[in-house]
Image (cartoon, rainbow, N blue to C red; front, top):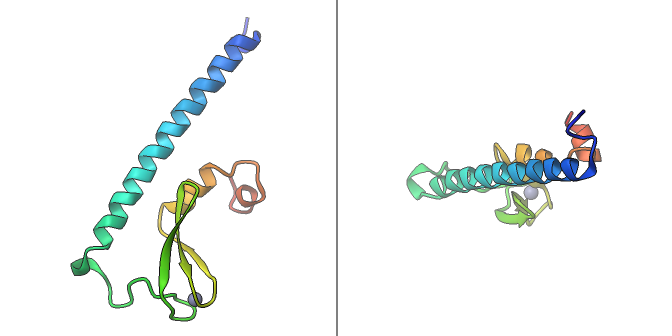
Length: 103
Ligand SMILES: [Zn+2]
C-alpha cells in the first residue's frame, strides 16, 4: 500500500515537504543577506555601486516578499543579485515566471 493512499499520510507528507522547503528558503535568504552585508562594506564596493546599468540613477534595495531587489528610481528597472532569482523561482513553480525561466 502506498504511503499516499490515505489522506492523513499524504497531508503529513505535504506538511513535512513544506516545512523543509521553508527551512531551505530561510537558509538561502540568510546566505544572501550575509553576502549583501559584505558588499555594503565601502572597501569592497565597486565605483559604480548601486548605479542603474541602464540609466545611471541610484538603485534602492527593496524587499518583495522573501526576495531583495534593486529598484531604479529613474527608469523603474528592477535588478536581482545572484541567488535572488533562484529564491524567486523556488516560490514560482507553476507560475508564468516559473515557466519563463524553466522551473
Ligand atoms: Zn534606471
